[in-house]
Amino acid sequence: MAVPKRKMSRSNTRSRRAQWKASAPKLVKVVENGKVDYRLPHQAHVVSDSAGTPLFMEYKGRKVADI
Amino acid sequence: MPTPTKGPRLGGGPSHQRHMLANLSVSLFEHKSIKTTVTKAKRLQPYAERLVNFAKQGDLTARRKVQGLIAGNSRTNKSVVHELFTVIGPAMANREGGYTRITKIGNRSGDNAPMAVIELVMEPVSPKQAVVSEAEGVAGHAADEAPAETAEETVETEEVTESAEKTEEDDK
Image (tube, rainbow over all chains, first blue to last red; front, side, top):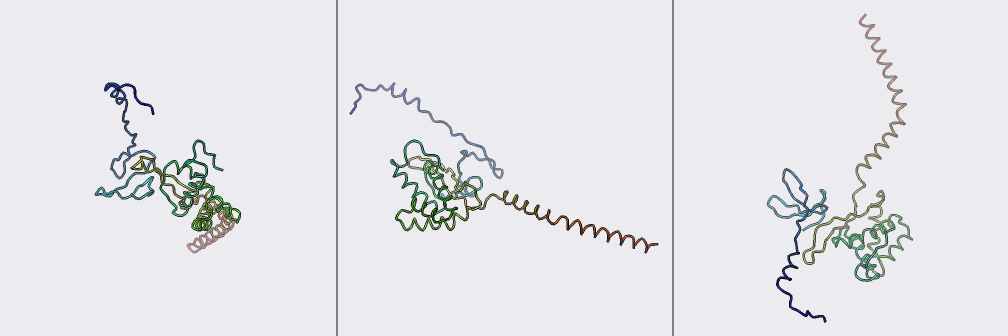
């Protein structure tokens, strides 16, 4: 099995980890019944009732799946 | 005919993939809608639609072909083949392809695999087309009935003119 020959410096470790970047998801703005919502494109979204309880998943007005 | 898949098989080997596609399509025809990964749903789509095309043919040869592909020695799968040929095939009679629909539903918690729901499109072919065919039918009827209607109208107009003349005479 290959084994590291030298200790990896804290600087090198941190330089490597500095390249890990999170990217913001590209959302689309949807206005439904006067409410603004941001959703992932081409993907079903969760429909919830007025109390905020999730009910089911919907895409283009069609019920797709239960939760 | 589905395009041959490139790259590695599902599950590891060609036979494993054959079994997975057969089992997925059996589940799809049994439940009409199944949740699976996007990759599997995309592989399943052409396979399942080909089976539906066999079901639309509906003859014994087609049935034996489908049974050879998905039924094997399983009796449950055989009953699914029966349902495919008696329920799903006739329901798809007016549909020219596009028998299944894939909807992405986000990533699975656990391994973050992108998931999708693949379902049979069982509703009747778009209402627009139904309206068009209906309109064509009406147009055809109208063309047949048109001469008769015009004849009636001319008769009516004559009667009207006659009655008008009579009223004029009465006034005099």
